[in-house]
Length: 156
Image 1: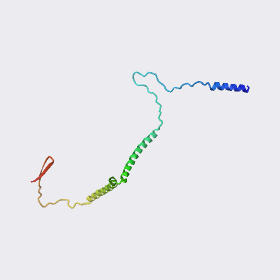
Image 2: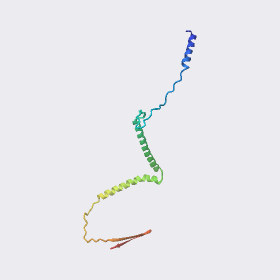
Image 3: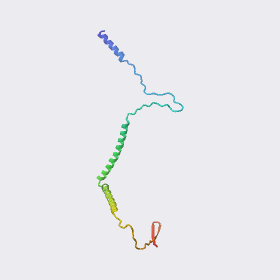
Image 4: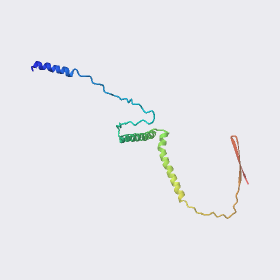
């Protein structure tokens, strides 16, 4: 075959094989099941393949992270409020400093009082009376009318 014939054949092959390709057929993108459903009773089960892409441990870790983040945000807001109160030269800042000290002082006073009462001893276990005992009963009368009230005691 000569060079001219080879070039003509190559051009014919290229023109017929690569330029006139058939159009691709359309691929189905959906499916409709036209089988009739039963008139009564339950519908037969349909296979539903698993399509989750997140593992269970990753979802659990994400939920725990959200909970920890919300808790830390609350602690941070509380610390910010306390520090704002300490930084301001107001009655609030003075109270923020002195209230914990006052609480410790009240606790120390309560402990000291409890210790003092625990150490106190009773000197008499019985009361001895040398005289006759009399009981004076008082009669109390109260009257209240309107805004003012009156109380009178009548000893007997």
